[in-house]
Length: 336
Image (tube, rainbow, N blue to C red; front, top):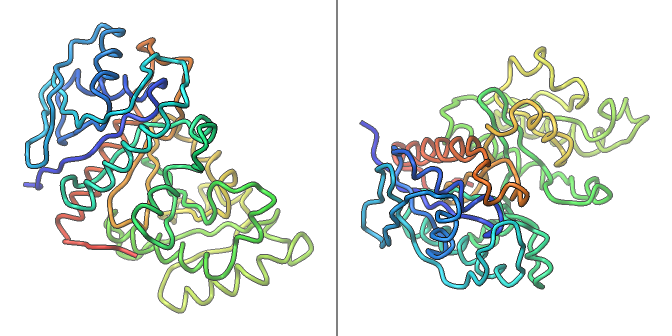
């Protein structure tokens, strides 16, 4: 039998759909032990608004998490001033970051086997005067690692990114041999460690249209990407590319691959989200902890209506549980 795991679940932006998605989970039984990292009052107010009868249990390290329908374990976090659905309040920004910090540190010290994150609102956090570009970068700094990799996945497709939340004008300069080597090594290692793939087959997209067309549409492929891929192939990593991104995402290539490595955010993720939005999971590779997340935003217009779809959160929890089980089974430590 698999070893039970316990996952920290951050409820995300208080004004968004994250709190009610957490409460929706509690209407049914769960296999994984989940501890919601959030304000108790926020969850109570949202449950009352939605007419949900959920009993909240204060959680402490070493205590089993509730898994029965109608029950939810909560690690209370102070500082949530406004609990109004759909109305952003920059005064809640530090509280949101505190939930992430508590969950991540709980994973680092062994209280949790992994963390799952509901969506946050980057804009309101930055409006509060806190520089914040996303979960991925925040957790990278908190965990003290040099490089992490953002990967989104569905049942049929995995897409990892060489660069993440950068303006398009900065992408080319950011694709250096060192970055490409680090990202590819992390992707290869974690596909083995967390997904049971002995020899991952990775498709690599070019940066430019037609992968540079032999240098006529850009020289990044010739000067940076191709030489770096050759170096990585010499290490035994199975790489195909650089391939034109407009034909890479076709059965001809994808049927014989385990993951795609895209050069920038909007090169790879629109295809994946079109293929599986609402049932995809965002995974941070290269951390010393397991972290998965939903593939959508805060959906302020749906908050408090009870109409939000928890499909992506279910997927994020299922994948997080599988990754944590794999880590327990293999005894994997810090991965990259």
